[in-house]
Structure formats: structure tokens, C-alpha cells
Length: 58
Image (cartoon, rainbow, N blue to C red):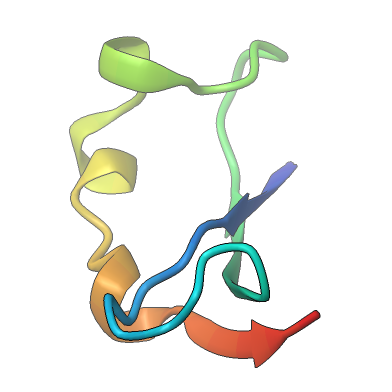
């Protein structure tokens, strides 16, 4: 199982220095490699980050 926490500002009106957004995804796969970039499975890359992530202030 891999857990990847994506941190980036989702809402464009928020200051990216003071705000972040987070989404935790549990991804199960048969190999120990961490999925990343274009090599990641299409289903993982297709997650709607902007709709699912939650904003927070630092």
C-alpha cells in the first residue's frame, strides 16, 4: 500500500504561501515502486484532485 499526500493550493484566490490543500489516497498495487508522473496508473492520475482536496491555512 502506498499513501501519497498531495499538497498544493486548489482555490486560485488563496495565497499559495499561506494556504495548502491536501488529499490522502491509499493505493494498492503488486509492485513496491512509488507511482509518479506519467508512469503512474491512469486511474491514479485521473483522480479529481481539485474537486476532492481540502484547503487549509498554515
